[in-house]
Image (cartoon, rainbow, N blue to C red):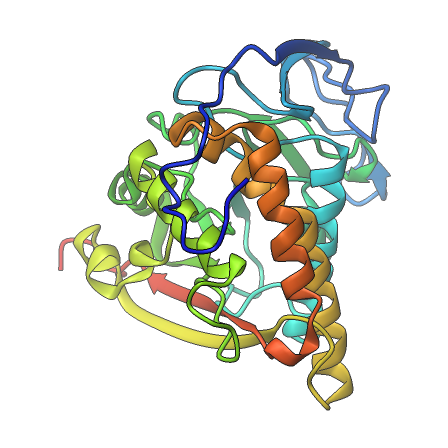
Length: 348
């Protein structure tokens, strides 16, 4: 159990990896996972909804650790789960983003008739599906470590399972590339941006969206919220994938060749404490995302990197939950929308 004032990196007992099992998942039979035919179904481009998969294999083997399912079990594996609880949370978060942007899917100047769009870390694919519906003549590709996308989608959506940290092998360049909620996912954002730059058309835009750490001005510095934030920072740094918004800095994007870097910051309330009705809705959705995501974001990182026991992590999550439900905290989270353009003349 983590008490106030206790160092986040020195729990009372060590964790272990014994609570790991392998779970076979048939993507076509559970939780809306797609059927993974080696050849995607074909149909008229605008005939509506069909299955358009380009994934290989019919059974995916997902490891289960401490009761949560993940995309991989290796020592360098991604820290977020891919189970049904997490999928529901991702869908709620997508709804929150739609409220935040008044129904828009992006703040970037997407061309009126894009041909190819890429969604990196597509998750359940909701954003990619929305873009496919908005731009029915564009091919929209969503890539993720997990095959957790639905099978009934517009005919111009394609999902692929791949590790985006490896060298990209797309046979095309894109008119727009989108990344959202990927803080702490990569060891080298510089490499990710270089691949984005290489796979964008000259003059095309990249959009990167991430939350900064939550602020709770009426919370004390020894609150459980700040204990968790400190622990997560330490664990993420130890994993080699730092947590935060350092990758959104202008100089990081410009070093990869991008220009016209712009940032728009929204303050997202945690809970229903704002007076404005729209802000109340956004805050309610974001609070749901946070509460459902406390265990998801912390369980694997804190047990693997800091040696915590699973029950220690869950105990801290319960205490943070009680604090976040207290509307008197008036907590909020800044979300950064960053757009950057590949120059029309990349040699400039």
